Length: 159
Image 1 (spheres, rainbow, N blue to C red):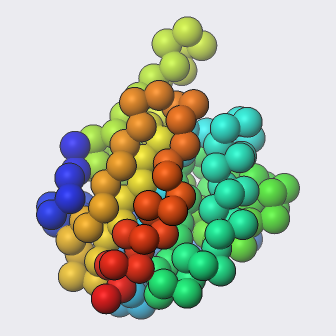
Image 2 (cartoon, helix red, strand yellow; image 1 turned 90 degrees about the vertical axis):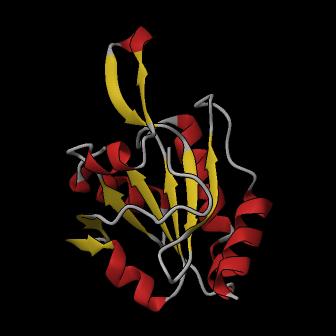
C-alpha cells in the first residue's frame, strides 16, 4: 500500500467533469496539491454521503490550495451521472480498468455480492512534488474518512 512519504504512483485515467477528458496526475500537481478520495461505487449510500460531505466542504478544501478528485472503478459515463445527480462541483476519475487501485494497492471485493476489484475507501493527499503527505485507507467500507484530518493534511501539503 502507498504510505505517507512515498512517491505517489503516476497515472493517466478518464476524467468525468460533465464531459469525458483525460486526467494526468503529473499535470494536476502543477496546480498544487491533489486530494484523491477513492470510493467503492457510485450511487451507493455511504459513497453518496461521502461525496456529498466533500462537496459541502469543497470551498474550505479549495481555500487550502488543493484540488479534490473522487476516484472509483465506475465508468466515466456513470460517474458523470453520479456527479450530476449529487450536484458535485469537483471532478471524478474513472478507474474502470482497475489500474489505479492496483498502483495504490487498495483493491477490495464485496464477496457477499459477488463483486470483485473495487476501490477501498481511501484518501491520499499528494503535495506538488508528488510525495504522499497523507494516507488513510479504511478497513471497513462503511467507515468514512475524518474530513477535518483530510482538510488539515491538504492545507499542510500546500505550505
